[in-house]
Image (tube, rainbow, N blue to C red; front, side, top):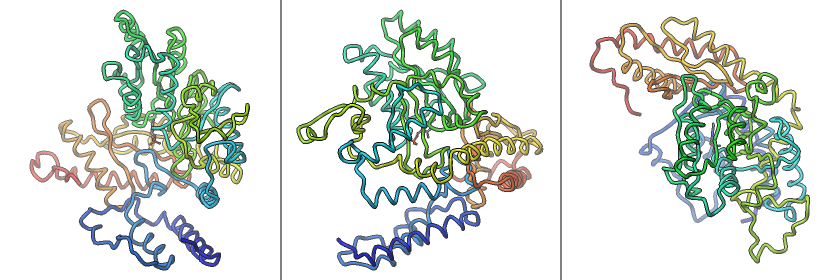
Length: 481
Ligand SMILES: *Cc1c(COP(=O)(O)O)cnc(C)c1O
């Protein structure tokens, strides 16, 4: 289990060369390549007893394994929240893994902990959190939501009132929130999923009346989970008003900015996110709109000292790690004990490119979304469903004389076709009972031409179907795979 210096270099350089070639070639590749299980069963992936040359294994990894995947860094990958990544982030991952950093405590990795503190400080500064703020890097938004809500639960309810607490959030909230609350001991009757308005935002008055009703029933409003950029449409809940309501009610305000918090780096985003600085906690995923390789999530608390109050534990085998003021042991800040040095990739990206380049990259996403909106508006039979705000938009093809149900089916099919063609990845979502296509063009490598060609291609696919659809009856049902 030991490679010589020569072998390490050869394998490492081969990997770097392949990654660089891949990044350079991305634009000409398909945005997505998938395969069915039966096909992949044919690959020779069994574990050998005897060694194989690393070069051969690396080649197999690239040719056979990494071939079958979506390419979320592709300039025409517009589905979900793309993962543009960036090479310096990947280099940072290689460094931290080559050194095998254990970023759990100060004793084990004080240098890395210092970088993590500085990077958290920078993120907290972007959203206008006070000096008391603190946080920790995590695997992603799901764990960040969980971590923040665990603190909210302990802070507001403690153990005695756990079964009386109620959490409020809109129907546009990411599914990880409900899952986190369930794992934290909230039963379904302690969750208030509030229908959002036509603008996909939660109405403060609905939260207020739900809280009043709960108080009358002897329950305790525990926390509101607000969105700073929903996954569906980028909608931002009224953060300032919700903060005021929470303060008045003694409830916790958690803001899920997994996707959208990054917009705070630029002027326009800061305006849109007004009030985010009043949150008690915030989820912020640098592996989304700050272009980090997976995984890189983060939770920020306006009072960072609350994290160890929920997560601190010191079993006998960890007694020697030390507890010095100002030298945090970050395994006391979340459910993770062993944890990688995730902060390095964001820190290194910012060192190499600088904050201004990061700002411009985020602004580019806002512009590309607006550009896409203008093109959709100019296309016949296409309608904008939600406007380009926060770097995403939704729209659909609505040819005259076709029932709404058929239009739903049809738009889903348009997304499947363009994605299967490999040209671009555009998929659907559902909004207020309607199926819409959705684009999130935040990749800094995405050009106007990428956006233009994609809209043109969508229109071409849509027209093809339009000839056959009305009254066609059979043969229009989209295939399920
Ligand atoms: C992506 C996303 C999450 C989940 O984050 P992961 O990193 O996938 O765990 C949570 N909330 C929002 C709003 C998101 O966009």
